[in-house]
Length: 149
Image (cartoon, rainbow, N blue to C red; front, side):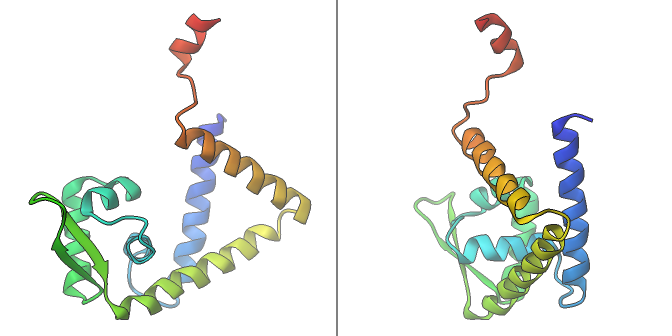
């Protein structure tokens, strides 16, 4: 199994655990909760950024935001230009964000049961290193890597 396959499999497993945790507390889908969290924390400010962050297309992001607006959790306002819409959360969003945070902490604890404290620290360090590297786009595509040798 490749690293990508392993990470994808791990992601699906964690996603299943998160869904089990969340299903006991809310009927809202996990991607709605994640959207609320990233908007609330100011990590995304527009539907374009939300679509990119959630790895969904623009129409799906628009439908998701429509639902959150309809539920009174998010508002849209004029952005920097006519094509950009600024997203903001309402005060009623915080209980939903907390549900996601609690579920994530419980899943972290479950995952932590299978690794020692040292292994968990090393895993976090390695994941941080990979994320930082990918964020800087320092991974050299295989085609280019061969030509540079």
